[in-house]
Image (cartoon, rainbow, N blue to C red):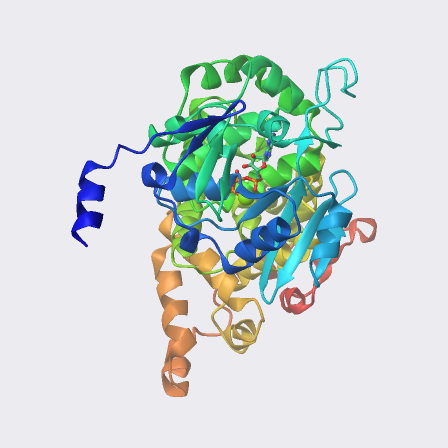
Length: 456
Ligand code: ATP
Ligand code: MG
């Protein structure tokens, strides 16, 4: 006991050691314990190591643990090939075509395992005419795998059996100093993959850490490269930002760096309209709050919010031309979705929900007869109502409407009967329609209640 005590008092301070080009940081310094790694990730590293392979926890998880955050998942890097990984585990499957990864399943947990990869030398690399890498799936070793990663904080390897961290690029010190630094020459790395610029913004916003000067500096002049990135990938990254739990901070940073242009083109217009901006900011704050409370957030709801003021503008211009509300809304929705699809590739499968949410909005105005009851039965009433509340909070519609629906939902049958407005209220516009030529006829001729029908 005394011996142990004396030993701990006189113990030499823990030091890093070198292993090849890596600095190896011991547990005594970084304090990330094996117990902080998920059950599945430990089973994978233990299993691979027992089979004679190297295996480390890598990427975002190590970074998050060093920053005192709970990782959302644990990725593993190994020198075993995908086939070799699969042969070690009972429930594992190889996925992906471009990068072949292995998913190892332990009950609910899916652990992603990737084989060390290397960056392909410039002369062999397939790039587009702007220098963007089209392929980087050659196997490599741990050091090469570190070098192909984006930021120093993302290139740390943690070995759960020794509790050591392997660091090739000073990521440990950077993370401790709350600095996000790109590995290598920023100009080259952004050219290889312009999405790294967006990742820089997202990760620094999400983690509350600073972008290193030389990492941030070239972004302003290189942002045009984002135009060459496939739309689906941009949308993925935008979604990651919006669903990061720090979407407000991400958008603020994007605007500050002038990166939002062309990325969310719909936003460009909206910033100029105070009510539109307020609406979007509220929607994002609402999303961040929901995520911080572990509630679900639907991408469709978010997109519906981001596009709402465009839909409103398109709708209003049609109403002014004398179109009826429902038909005008259908056309407005289709116009905005088509325009947006060309820019951001919002997938078709989101359309139905977005349209339901939008179509419900005008139905909230109708508070007479059977209509409010029919609206309550809509499967997506809750989303529509949340959307209405955002509109109220942004000042677009009178708060009274939101309060009315808030009460009506839970009110007794008698109270509901009292609350209903006299038949005919809020419907004047509909009755005042102009005669229209047959050829123009469209959904505009449907009765208002047609909005009940599914729209796809
Ligand atoms: P998050 O917490 O959002 O998941 P993450 O850093 O884990 O953050 P992932 O997209 O899961 O992000 O990527 C896992 C790892 O793959 C990263 O930590 C990084 O090492 C590497 N990586 C991801 N995208 C790139 C990229 N565009 N260029 C280079 N390396 C990348
Ligand atoms: Mg990750």
